[in-house]
Image (cartoon, rainbow, N blue to C red):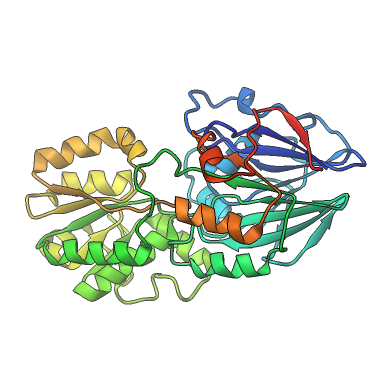
Length: 398
């Protein structure tokens, strides 16, 4: 079995790994867009033969989760190529398409898999492992072929609301793999240990208790863990959670009764015109601002500004990666103008250094190869068996 990291040895995002079996059959693990992509054109496809033209040896693409840096370059592939993903990942992509979100698409030829249920893909046996990540329905992949084992970590952590999956996966994985392709997104950060979602919930609760007026929480609508965290803080402070139309639709489509949704009396949908028992208008929010926590999209935010819902009693919580703040400069300008208090409450969707160490110690790989990191050299400091490769460098699993 040969491996080639087409993109990701020295960057976060844009992940794409080509794996070749001894009989020449090939699969691709993720096909993401780089986070810093300045264009949106097919030249962003990784250099993998057969992505746009038909070739019999490229037999499938595996998508680890529904973050665009792991799947969105797939919009330019030959639609006949089979694409494999989790059932909920497919639902997330379809919900985004149904709500006409920008830059969203759905693959045409999709097969879904289930956690820990191996499936055969040509010369490969693939076992997906559901992981703890800020994306709902994220997976690691164990790839077996030619008597060798490759473990692709995907994006993972052990401090989210699904942290028990980390321990469970360690117990379920083979005692030793030949190569571990492991993400290192956190390397280069000063904090070795990241807050858990439960610790973050306590921080939200503290801020909510101190706030008299309306609360806005800026977070990804696909970060289901964070929606749960915010909802639990709402519940403990007697507030109602107000979702965007997209977030409400996504939670309904996921069909998980344990997630906040519009059938719960303290969950509402923000609506300007279409009013029903599940919705709340900007006028209703203005009349009793202290009862609500809003997860705003741009249209929601703009409406709240126009209807004078923001003032010096309002709290704005930034709950995403700080690298995205530049994209929200206009919102911060409006917040400052209205005298809104702003705080940052966030935790990473990626593994901290103690988690990386534990994962390597328990899976005992012969070789650890960094991916999805700006600092691959740090792996050498952490792991004696780390081997660094460059993008487009082919290496054989021995």
